[in-house]
Image (cartoon, rainbow, N blue to C red; front, side, top):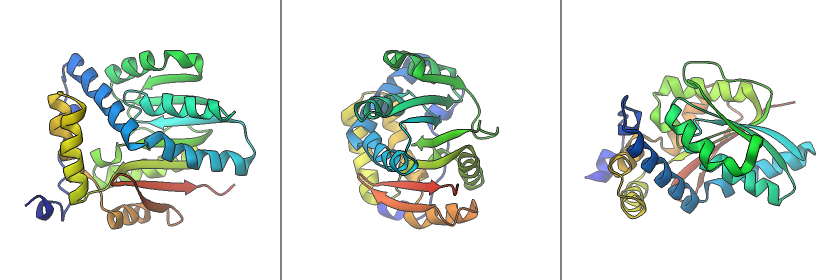
Length: 237
């Protein structure tokens, strides 16, 4: 039954997207999502592409825009990894939720002024420009097709390299999300939103079609572990 339900995208608002979410529960959910990102190797996958970009551009200092930065785990993970490899990152995280920005700022205190978070509506407003890299993790599936295409276009306009990591809609991903969300946390938000996130997600073909709709035919879309998709776009210099 779950496999049949995943044939088409079933886009619905998730609990964390609702107004008036309890701040304590929101914090628990952000902490759990950080653990899930760590287990999924999100930062490792993103860093591999960022390192290739830095090498090709011969840069040891990069400005990074983290779109829909959530709890800040991706920003902090990238900053720590880059530091180990002798690359300095200056990261600006944008998120619609003041609670998420506060949570993220506390998580990233160890980075000092190298990581900053700002409250912003990344869906309906233009993104700031002048960045080397723009990243976005586990957010695109929250959006309608039109919103997702528009966000991809604005990310590409804001940075030379755009990287988007998101879920891939498939039966294995649904089972994995259901199990992982129950192992990682007791948060009712995460346990409900995890499986729904997979229903909301794009298939590999749909993500490629989305890049075409965003007028990004040179973007690449690849499957990455575990049951995720990674979009990569290099802007011609």
